[in-house]
Image (cartoon, rainbow, N blue to C red; front, side, top):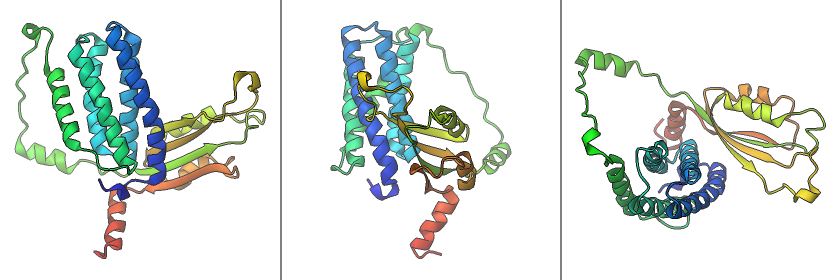
Length: 270
């Protein structure tokens, strides 16, 4: 894997949360193994895979994003009640955790992951996804009328270009921000409205309950935002906070066309 295509800071944030999610998924699956009717365990496992999928997409790790999408699709059937929890299902899902950890270890630079293991896991996941608990009721696929070639060409040429940029945003405010009338949650919502936003909360500064001061802010956040907005647009949202030492916006990747141009310049093509 070419690790140079990933932003180190964004990867660090992703790995931090992915590790927690892997533990959550494993715990949920073990609970489900002992209690196949435990819907909370199904939901927790689903959310864990969904979170990792979103984070992988935001840092540009397409292989992991596609892998977790397949697992998520299988679990969505379990959540909806159209697929039963079986020993084979649990075994397959537990094996997928090994693949998650392999992907993340490789992303962290701790050696190469054997991707044939992921391919074998995907094959088993797809077999289970394609099964039916009641084959007789499986609907036959409807015939689809193919569009005329001219229409296909028209549609393909009118596809809009991806003009999004990716930003890394750090929001570490003064602990007195709440007393000063600031509301970080409103700001987080503002960033969510700008595009596809992946948020990592940092909770390690929260004290034990007996020492907790509810008037102080003990959390801070890191965001990876994929958006068509400019740096100036995003800085405008932070106009009252840019003097804060822990507040920062960094461009990770520009629009694909612009990024490719820069790569060509660096390679001496242009």
